Amino acid sequence: MDFDIKYRDFRQDVRAFCEEKIAPHAVKVDQDQFYSKEVHEVVNSRGWWGCVVPKEYGGLGLSTVEYAIIVEEISRVCGSTGLTHAAHNSLGTCPIHMFGTEEQKKKYLPEGAKGKLIAFGLTEPEAGSDAGGTKSKAEKIDDGYLLNGTKCWITSANVCDYAIATARTSDEGGVHGISSFVLEKGMEGFTAGKKENKMGCRGSDTAYLHFDDVKLPAWHLLGEEGNGFKEFMITLDGGRISIGAMGIGIAQAALEIALKVSGSRMENGKPVSRMQSIQFKLADMATKVETARLLMYKTAWMKDNHIPFTKISAMCKLYASEVCNFNTYHAIGICGMDGLTDKYPAERYFRDMKLTEIGEGTSEIQRMVIAREALKEMQAQMA
Image (cartoon, rainbow, N blue to C red; front, side):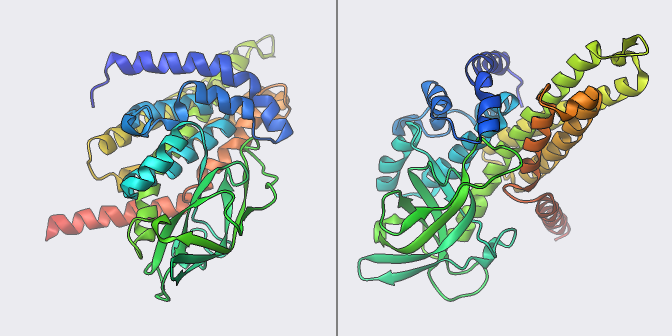
């Protein structure tokens, strides 16, 4: 990968904007637990809801590397906004671009690029890590499908304008017979539930989606019938880059507050930053976040260059989330008892961190994916 100067200039521009326009809202959206329309429009002013939407459909057409930098920098100042932004781009617009018909692309991608949020409906009450256990059903009718089911833990459920969701179109078990569909808010029978009271990322909207006899015209089928599970797994490969970027952004913020506080917090008449035990923690935090960032860059570069990246995207998401855990945990300790209060943002970083370990596939799932892909590679070499 070429570490061109343009990426450094690009990051500096994005960081300056996020610090000036998004950071001032971070505490309020977290404390009040609401999705900020004001912040939404701030993001929209840069066209960032259309980061990965091609220019011909009204988006910015950015590379995955550039997009990941934006997710990281937004998350560095506000995890809630970072999550909403990542979910919309990676899980909302991407599958429509990858699998949609030209009619679907022309209708939904320009809307997504303008800030009309698109939710991603995969998880169900009894189908979390076991995404193949989907119970939602789409029964064929004369002019399309009749959709019934429930999705849970859906980012932007109440504030989205559109959603894509999986449902069974046949009685075949496992991952077979699952298809995906595009839905529009306002369709009869398509509703969202009560906003979840979450531990972290509280400024993002998370709720159930309910489908009660939703009539979908045939053209709302996304991709091929029976291929929905595969489509969503491909989508998640890319989504894991953005969750990795989110974790890196939060980890970077945790490192920065730890560095700042350690230089001003006094013990025995001297800053705690002079203590070797604190220095070792700071060194580990800095090394880990830089390593995670390099892994993110490589993963994004591989995606941009159409190199298979399933294994490395799982590595990126897994490692970045664990670094985020490490950095936020130690940032609180370095801040002392004040780290447990809202005097410093360290406690918010720690709460926001947990989403990166669970969302878009738990750490255990990432390890399963990594091991499976590594074994495949070894078997191919031995064949």
